[in-house]
Structures are given as structure tokens and as C-alpha cells.
Length: 364
Image (cartoon, rainbow, N blue to C red; front, side, top):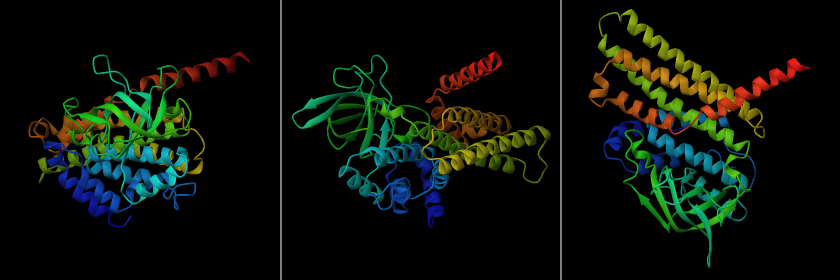
């Protein structure tokens, strides 16, 4: 993609400043929009089916953006998820109009699914108003809050009974962003705040009840998240190897440091192989679910990321973290993002399925 390298360099150069003074990363997203990055999942022409970029290309770009700045990658991750769902599910003529605006770089999307814990407000729900459907209540971890233009919001139906619904929502009115809620050490300019909906207008309900977890989209969303993790881990690898090279300038690194670097590179290559296979599979069989493969992929990529962080800290020592160097930011971003996703339930389901398959096979 022509011009991407220069845009990534500019995004990377501004990452430390945005971390120090968190705000929605408008300039990075403007740069990406100008290169067509926001349009990667959008059909061309917008009235058609399909997508203008392969999954391999989309995920390569997402990983590179996450490497430049984890917070920008987090917002782009959600936007790409939302654009894919919008293209697949929105009714016409809303679909074509909204996709055209996305392709032109005029709309940035989010996907907001997290409900508040007790004490943070009532979970978001649909309400019927004279002007149509609207949303009342609260969502948390709303990445891009105050900056994205539309959100696909997982909401409770009127009355609160039944599976959640996926509401495509205009965020220009009826939305209050609680910027005091998100005080995390990592992903500080992802603007992942608590949002209070006060009659935000719903443009359309997308799909069926329980739509957010429908396949093949849900498992692809999961892989996209792992791609974002890998990009943040790439940043940690770059930083760690840079620190070690500077510390051992003019002399051979010792065995302990060299072993740590070897483990870092091995973990990065492990993530590479998993994600390469996932992209190939998604492009060859786009209508096929990636469950339960996605659970194994996420577990493997998350383990590789943690190995990278642990070995980097062991080899580099406390100095990068005490001084707030790039390695410190990379670690804070990645650790927080990994904590936002519970991997154990999906992995346990896959393990249980394989045990039962084996038991049934031996019973024949």
C-alpha cells in the first residue's frame, strides 16, 4: 500500500506523546483513512458483495498499525470488525450510504459489547421512542468513545428478555462519555471509556438476536484481536532488541541475554506462523467458521506475547520501565489488552470436545 510506511512512521513518532496526554488519535486515523485503510473490508463498489482487500492484506496492515501505536491499532481493530458486519448485515439503502462514507474516510466505527459491573449503571437496552428505536443505559470498555462516529452496540431487547441485539447506532446525540472511568496504564489513547446512552438513535438492528456471536464473523473478530496483540508484541520485540544492542555495543552479549533474545524471536515466529495460516484459511474459506481453531490460535498467540514480555523484562532489566521508554509503553498496552479477553472458557470447550470425541471413538 503506497504511503503506508511513511504514515506508520508518523504514527509511531507521536505514540509517546499521545500516551503522555491521552486523546482520541484523530491525526493517525486521518492518515490511515487517506490511504484507504478504513475501507479494507468494504466492497468495491459498495453496492456489491465481497471485500476490496484480502484478509491477509487487512491483517498485515492492522498488525503494522498496532506495532506503530497499540492504541491506534485497538481502534482500527474495532473499526474493521464493525465495517465487516455493516457490509454483511445492514439493510439498503442505509448499507450503501454508510459504506460509501466509510470508504471515503468520513466514518469511523466501533463495536461495543461490554456490560457494566454492579455499581456502574444499568446495562444498555433498546427503548421505543416517537422517533424510532433508541438506546438507554451503560456500556464499558467502549474503545474510541468520543471519537468514533457510529457503534455496533450489543444491547438488551425492550423488556430485557431474550438474547442481545446488535444496534447500529449514531453517536452524534444522546451519548455521554465518562472519561473518569478508564484510568488504565495501557492503551491510554484508545479512549476506552464508560458510555452512558441517553436516547442515542438506532439507525438499524443488524441481523438476528444474538448476532454479535454469529459465525463466521465472531471467530474472525477473535483472530483480528490476536493480530492486534501480535502487532503490539512486535513493538516490544523491536524495543527489547534495540535496548540489548545498545547495552552490549562493542562487546559480545552473554549467554543469558542471548538466550532471552532467542526466546523472544522464537515466540514472535510462533505467532507469525499461526496468523499466516489463519489468513490463508480465511481467504480460502470465507464462509466457514474458524471455531474452534480460533481458540487455539488466540491461546498460542497470547502465550507468545507473554513470553516476549517476560523475556524482554528479564534481559533488559528495570531501566526501560523506570524511565518510561518505548518498551514500557509496549508492555503496558499489551498486558491490558490481553486481560480484556478471557481465553480459558473457549479453550476449555475445545478440550472437552476433543475428550468426548476420543471417548466416543474408543467406544465404537
